Length: 111
Image 1 (cartoon, one colour):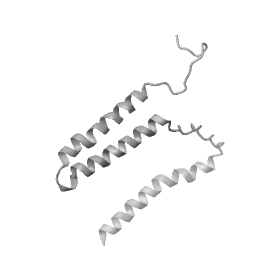
Image 2: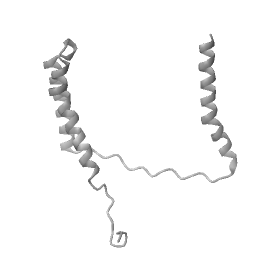
Image 3: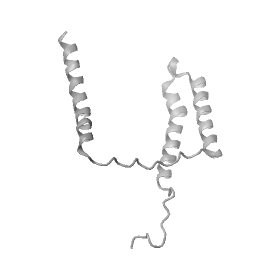
Image 4: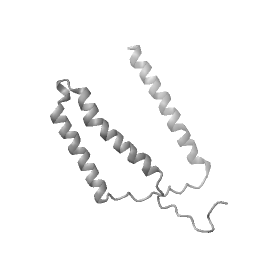
């Protein structure tokens, strides 16, 4: 029974840590902060949809061919999953180097 009481005590401490600052912050008289500006979700173009579909088909084909649940984990990992992880990882890295609408005008350039 003492284990259950310890869990309840830890839960009570966590609730106090998260909710007491929120309850006291309401009475400070500060003006509410503006919500953060959210970007619209990027719509998937045809190439991205084709890449996602090819990835799903490749993974399903590798699952059916290598049958990792019967012991073919190494081949499935090397031929089925690893190429997808590498390809999507490279896409993720190269997408980080692409500008995302942050065009600088002549007055906003750093010197």
